[in-house]
Structures are given as C-alpha cells and as structure tokens.
Length: 241
Image (cartoon, rainbow, N blue to C red):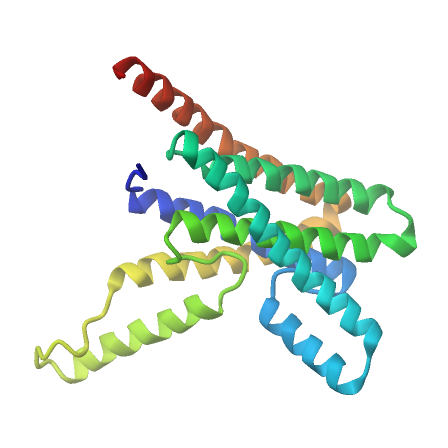
C-alpha cells in the first residue's frame, strides 16, 4: 500500500534536487558545451541535424536522449523494486544511485583522456538527470520536475494571471481561482535551479572535478535519513504482523 507523502517533504525534496540539477546542468554545459537535461532543446537539435544531414550531430543528440530515457527507466525499476518491499522512502535508493553516478562523473572529469572526457561526461550526466527527474516525478505524482523549468515557469505565469484576473474581476464566478500552493512550490523550485546553476559554474571554476562528488554527498545526506526511516518503519510493521 502506497502511503501518502507530506506535501512539505515533497517541497523540500524538489528544492534540493532542483538546485543539484541546476548545478549539474550548468557545469556540464560549462565543461562540455552541451546541456544534459534539456530534452526539448536536444530534440530540436536532433531535428535540425536530421534535416541538414549532419549525422555526427544526429548520433550525439540521439545518444543524449537515449541516455536520459535510460536513466528514467532505471530509476523506475529501482523505485518499483523498493516499493514492493515497503513504500516509504523508496526513492532514496535512486538518490544513492544518482550520488554514485556523480562520483563517477567526477572521476571521469579528473582522469579520463582528453578526447573522451566531454562525450563521456555528457552521456553520463544525461543518464543521471533522467534518473533524477524520474525520482521526483514518481514521488510527487508528476506535480514536480527538477531537471527543467519550462512547465513550472508556465504554471507560475498561469497562477499569476489568475491572481491578476481575480483582482481585476472580483466577482466570484469560479473562473479565476488561483492555486497559491503551486506558486509556493514552483517559485522556490525555479529559484533553486537558478541558484544551483550559479553555484555549479562558480564551483567548477573553484574546485573543478570535485564539484560532482560534492553534489553526490548532498544526495547521500538526503537519502540516508530516508533509508533509516524506511528501516524503522519496516521493523515496526514486522512486529505488528
């Protein structure tokens, strides 16, 4: 049986993961010249490459999309297997997997041959971002995305428009019902992504390849308490059976 999550917990998770995604995405572009979570832009690049017959670009963009999809699929498998044992905290194992991938990304950035560094980093981080986006999508029942902000910025605009319409047309006709909870969720999440991007570029300039392992440590700090709570809940459930 799936337990209902506390909305405040979803918000904290969204803000944290958005900041990490922003840092990884910006650092990946700074290092390798390619966004690793922006699938809208990547699909557009793929379309351009196909139309222009640029088959080397077709291979690159197609591989990035495939890695993102594969990351989401692996995350789903991990969460499903964990939920079959106990629903609470199932996402934490995917967070640990993401942390491990970020440590691996730091190793690639530090030790991979120069000609292989950028391709490996782009593909690895795309897989990682797909994995992360699937985590928060599953946890929030698709209310939140953390690796891209288009939908959230759109929702912010809609709710601001609803608030403005309510102010201009105070008649309570049920048309201009703004959802302030969406604003309270999406505005900090977008700001977290922005702040993470700034930290990602500045951090990479300061500490280089250590940036990705440090982001992995943040994920571990989020995942370990959730796994601990899950273990306690599992033992309590076992004693009541």
